[in-house]
Image (cartoon, rainbow, N blue to C red):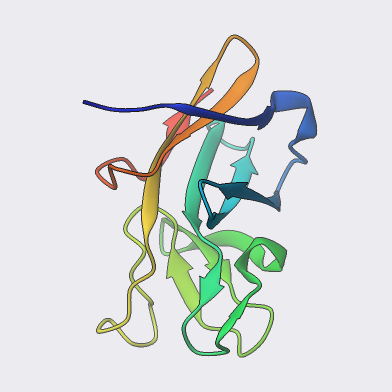
Length: 119
């Protein structure tokens, strides 16, 4: 069973940018990409290369049709839908189910089946 946890308001999100939320002791990076199809993504905030919680401060974009975040430290790109590092496919960050419900951003830490949700 999925347990959805309110983490912030939709108004707290910034377009094409990330925010970090502490959810049950886990740092979760949340990204809102309003164009071309409005999507929101949740991944672990920990950069396994830089060994720091910084991914929410990374640049987001698209590489070959894949939504990605580039680490602000060493610039590796992580797919926001799968968590896989584009430069080293043996490295993966956690992804979390996320949704918008009644103006609230909700995350589920027990499931990594969903990489992003439409608003």
